[in-house]
Length: 241
Image 1 (cartoon, one colour):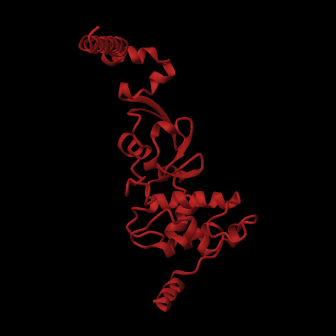
Image 2 (cartoon, helix red, strand yellow):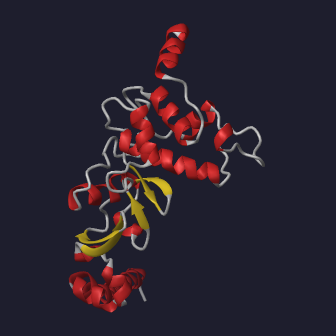
Image 3 (tube, helix red, strand yellow):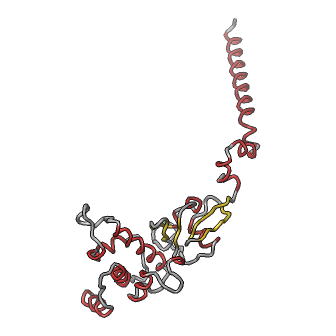
C-alpha cells in the first residue's frame, strides 16, 4: 500500500476514534449537566437538605436558651444570621475578618469569632450572645464589673470583650494555660492570675478607644481580686507618661 494511502488511513482512523469517544462522553455527562434536578434527586435526603443548589435551607439554632428556626443560605455566617435574621444586634460586626474580636460569642461555653463560622455549623450547639448574659434585671458579674471599672468608652467592642472575659474566667477554672504562663503543668488560678496573663488571654479582642486598663480591672474584680481604684490607675498612668 502506498505511503500516502497508509497515512490517510491512519488519520481517518484516529479521527473516527476521537469522534466516537467524544460522543460517548457527551452521552454520559450531558444529562447530569443539563438536568441539575436529576443530580439532586440522585443524592440521599441528608445530602439534599444542605445542598447549595437549593438556595436557602432550614437551620435550627439554640440561642440564649431559645430555639430559632431560620431559612438561610449555607454560606451565611453566624454573625450575619444573628444580626440580619434574628435581630440580635448586640453582637457587633467590626472587621468581619476575625481580627478585632467585636463579634465574639460563646458556643457551648467556648468563645468564637462569629464572623468566621457558618451558622449552619452551629446546629445542636448552645449559643450565648451578649443579650443572654443577664438574668432579668440582674447583670452578669462581668457586665457589672465592666460598668464599675469603666471598662468601655464608645462601647462598640464591649459585647465581644465581655463574652471573651466570661470565657476567660471559665478557662482559668479549667486550668488552661496561655502563651505567657510560666509553669505549664501548674497554670495560675483566679486569685493569682497576673495582669500580663489577663492581657495575653484577651489579646484577640481589640479596643480602639484603648480602655484596656478598665477592662483589666473589671476582669480582676470578676476573678475575685481587688483591682486598683480609678484614682490609683490615673496616677500610675501619669507617672508612666
